[in-house]
Length: 249
Image (cartoon, rainbow, N blue to C red; front, side, top):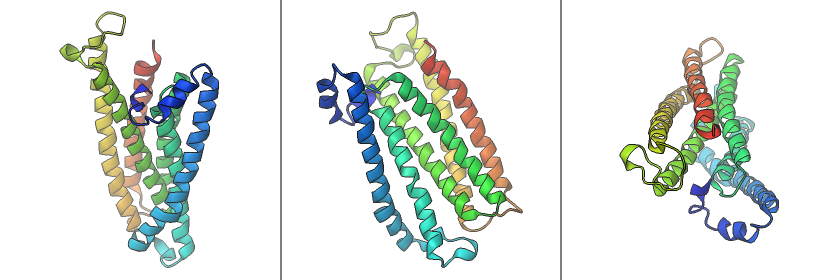
C-alpha cells in the first residue's frame, strides 16, 4: 500500500534499488517480515507478557488452575503466538510495492482469521476451557485492532491524495466519470463498517473480562455466543464490501 511509504521510509531505498528486479524485492521484503515477526514473538513472550503476568496475575487465572504456573505460561504462549500473524498482516498491507493480489489475499485471510478466533472461543467455552476461550477473545481484539490500524493508513493515503467524497475530491490522476461519487459511497460504507468493528471490540472486551472472572462455563455462555453472531455479521458485511471496493475494476 502506497500509504505506508511515509511510515516505513526505510523501505523506499530498497524498493528503488531493486526496481529492475521486482520478484527479488518481494522475496526480500517477505523474508524481512518473517524475521520481524519472529523478533516480535520473542519480545512479547520474554518481556511484555511476562511482565503483565507478574503485575496482574489475577487476570491470567481461571478455574482450578489458579496457582499453576504451567497454566499462566500456556496463556502467555497463546497470546504471543498471535503477534507474528499481526506483524505479517500489517507489514504486507502497509509496505509499498507489493503485488496487489498478495495484499488482497492477506486482507481476506485476516478477516477469516478474526472470525475463526471468535468461533474457537465459543467452542472452548462449550468444552469448559475458559483459558483457551479468553486467549482467543484476546487474539480477536488484537486482530481487529490491526484491521483498524491498516484502515487508518488507507484513509490517510486517500486524504493525502485528495481522494475524498463529494465536493472535497481534488485528485487528478483517475480516469472515469464522477469518481467523487465512488469515494462518497466508499467512505460511507467502510466508515460504517469501521464503527461496527469498534462496537464489536467493545462488546468482546466486556465478554473477555467476564470470561476471566469465570462468569461463563459449558452450562452458560450465551453472551459470548451472541457476541460471536454479531461479529460474524460484521465479517459478512466485509465479505461484500471487499470485492465491491477493492477487486472490481
